Length: 330
Ligand SMILES: Cc1cc2nc3c(=O)[nH]c(=O)nc-3n(C[C@H](O)[C@H](O)[C@H](O)COP(=O)(O)O)c2cc1C
Image 1 (tube, rainbow, N blue to C red):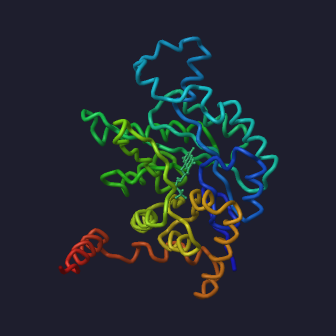
Image 2: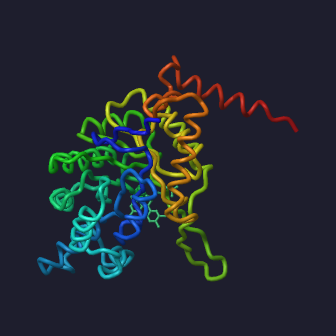
Image 3: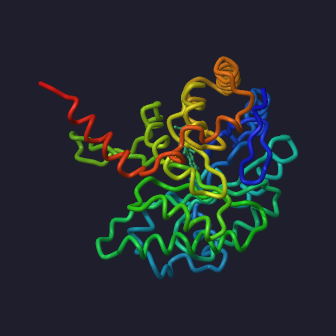
């Protein structure tokens, strides 16, 4: 069985990639994941806010923030609360490159154009095989128009891709009015691939203290469905790579993501639940499924259930929506 896949111009031994998470903080754990069969690994993110805070500290201008009030700054973790300082991040990346034989993908996290994007070059110089740029942003200002926000994101992508020679994947959320068009815009700005999707960590209310309760719930595979839909829609149109992130918890989930058009499948929650060896279970299960169903390669599977042969995907989606509502009787 040929499990190899091309992702961001890299040839990977199979489609299973460890998504951005604390798994790269310890080279020993990253090595366990590699030994279990992971084909590539994404480091946790360095954040725009973290890099800007360090740059300000360097020039002794900590209080002279032009674009954020003291109160806004106080929402963010203190510099020392981040797991890796920017310098440690680069050292850890170099260490991972010496320890691992699989590709190591660095991660930058921010959405607004600015000097912080120059850090992409430092990540590339430290040996990253590729870079993932996470555009996580929750827009709350009602005066900002969607087009203006997306233009800023595209500019950020362009400033990163023009800074580095390594391939850049862009990790996005599903909240874009014309998502397929936005993906093409990202490609136009030099992105070699797109990761669908960010998960939004949704805070709850504590009714006793009337406080906002930040929480991180791991995913389950109901979250995969959103990814399958958009992978299937976007996949016939992209020139570059697609990666599924969110809700892959079984070999069948991984197979579905590839059928929809993903070149790689990123996994985090399932590993946090079951441990690094779960990668082997996923890999063996995928291979078994492919053999049972007469496939010879992952490449053959990739995109086999995307919308390429659907003459009018919008009508298809709307028709299914109407049909499913009409199927209920009380
Ligand atoms: C503990 C934890 C830390 C994470 N850290 C990052 C990060 O630094 N950067 C990032 O882009 N995504 C981060 N993520 C998101 C994951 O990469 C992934 O997109 C998300 O968990 C959905 O995949 P899953 O369903 O397999 O968990 C993190 C997720 C978890 C659970």
